[in-house]
Image (cartoon, rainbow, N blue to C red; front, side, top):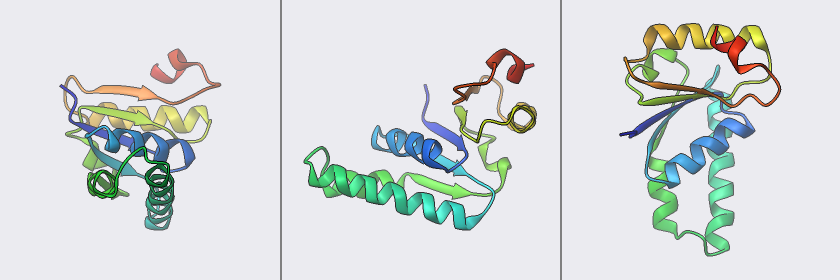
Length: 127
């Protein structure tokens, strides 16, 4: 059962993935290179959730509970106990390969690893 999701990359796609997972009731660990990027990502998620509340899709309680389920960090080691980790960094093959190499070393056995790539060969990333 998936209960904790890790997301590597807090840009538009990464914070969108974290946003949806948190609203679905999952605990999320969002990772990026700097605290500033993480603060910006949390602010973007809050703005997007505010818009959803105004449209009547969620209420304030659901929004605040979802935001509380998101932890931010700059240390990849915190992803070690995640049930699933989704990589959502920019489209750079070498960067993605290095992330998956590190995830392979730190994630628990049986953890699912996924990529949000849209243009790169997933088989090459996995190699």
